[in-house]
Length: 154
Ligand SMILES: [Zn+2]
Image 1 (tube, rainbow, N blue to C red):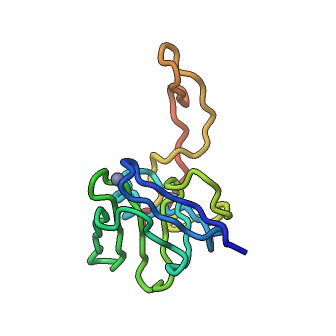
Image 2 (cartoon, rainbow, N blue to C red):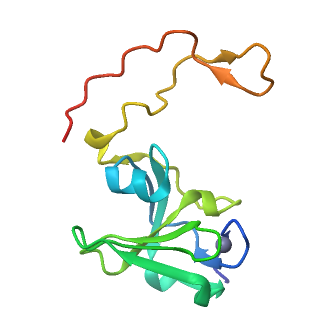
């Protein structure tokens, strides 16, 4: 029996990555380094065994950056900048990929939140939203934002 696969692709299409599904796990990373590297409040990753990942296309278009502080290695498409791979130090056989690379299911729901203490105070936390008059497709929370829950700044 052939195992199931999911194919991830970067924004410009230069890089195509195939992984076996179901993945090992899926998680949200609220850490400051991921916020900065991905340009977002938090990123959702799927983690899988490196041995279950294959670069189908565009290996030469993949650029890497090793964070000297954490020794984490992040890869991205050198052409369009899409984050591709995230290898955390000390987890040699595991590799993480942004869940958003995949259009199809990866076999695991993101149930885990890492580095939550570093959550951005501006992160969306499920406040009620309503349409903004005069701006089709724009929702907002209203004139006053509820105070974010107190989170330790470390
Ligand atoms: Zn690309």
